[in-house]
Length: 465
Ligand SMILES: [Fe+2]
Ligand SMILES: [Fe+2]
Image 1 (cartoon, rainbow, N blue to C red):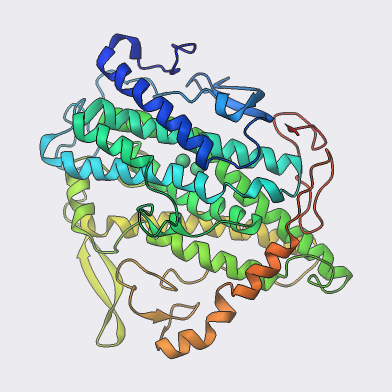
Image 2 (spheres, helix red, strand yellow; image 1 turned 180 degrees about the vertical axis):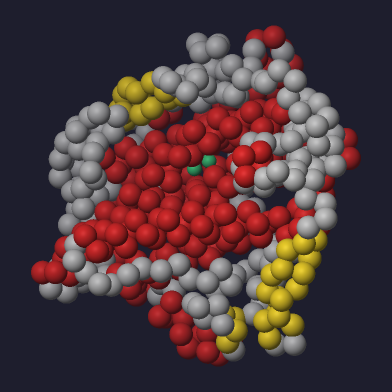
C-alpha cells in the first residue's frame, strides 16, 4: 500500500514511471475541476470524512476531519486472484485478460468513459446542495458521497491511462471538460444532466441513480478484463453508502410527512406531501432505468460473448455461463399494441440486469411503506411500470401510464402533472430548503436518522463551519 505517495495507491504506481507521470499531470487538472465544480462554499471547512486506506474487508476506511480539496483520492484495486479466469461467454474458463482484448478496445473504452463520466457529473449536479442542508449529519453525507464520486473518477481514469495509451489520456482530459447540464458540452447520459437542486432530488438520485451504478459495477466486477473487475469490486464497497444515504434519506422524509399527516395537512405544516414524493420517485426511477440501455441490444450480446460484462452475480446466481441457447420474452410495441417478442437471451442482457435493479428498488419501496404502516397510515408509495416515461430503448417514443398501459401522447400530457414533478412542485420543495447547521438540529420536513455515523451521535459536529 503506497498510502503516502502523492497519489495513494495499491497498484505500485512508483514502478511504472510513465503511468505515474501521466497521472501526476492529470492531478492538478482534477484539483482545478474540484475547486471549480465541487461543493460550493465549503472547500475550506473541516468535514468528518471516511477515506479509503486499504481494500481489506475490515478497517478499509479511516475517519477523520479533512478539508475536501485535501482528501486523499487514491487508486485502489481489489487484490488480483491467482489464476483468474474468464467467468462467462465464449471464452469461459480461459485465463482472464490482463490487457485489453484488441477487438473490444473501442467498446471497452466507451464503457469505462461512460461510467467515468457519471462520477464527476453527479458532483456537479449536487454542488449547490450544501447551502440548504437539513442537518450537519446530512451535509457530511453529501460531501462523503461527493468525494467518493471523485475517487471513482480516479478509478476510471487509472484504467484509461494505464490500458488505453494516448486515447485513454485524451479521454481522461475530456472527463474534466464536460459539464452536467451544459448544452454545449453535456455529460454523456441524460440522468446526469438533470438538475439535482433540492434534497428530495438528492435522496431520490442516490436511491435510484446510484443504484444503477451498483448494477453496472456489479456486472463489470466479474469482467474477464481483470483490472476492470478489481477496480469495480472496490468501488462497490463505497457505493453501498451512497445508496444508504438515498434509501434512508427518502425513508426519513416519508416518516416526517407521515407524522405531519397525522397532525393535519403535511403541506400546511411545512412537510412534503406524499404525492410529491411519489412524483419524484417516478421521475428518477424512469430516468435511471434508461441507464441500462436498450431492451434488445447486440452490444450486450457482444460484451457477454467476449466475457467483458456479465449478469448480476453471474457466478453465484447462474450455472450456465454460456447463455448461448436460451431465449427471453419481452413486450414490445407493434402496430400500436404491446406484443410479446422472443429474443436470444444474450441480446436481452440489459433487460435482465434492469430486472435485477427493479427488484432491488422494490425492496426500497417496501421499506418506505413499512414506515408508513408503522406511523399508522394506509397510504402507500409505488414504483411505476418500467415502461413509464422512458427515453431509451423499446418504449421510448411511445407513451405509457404509470401501470404500463399504452396511452396516447395527448393522454400522457394530460396526466403529466399527476405523475411527474411540476414546476410548482419543485418550487414548493425548494421553498422548504433552508440550511440547518446547529449540531443536533434538523429541518422540519425530514425526520432525524436512527443513528449517527460510525458510532458518533446525530448531535456530533460532522462539519465545522
Ligand atoms: Fe460512483
Ligand atoms: Fe455513487
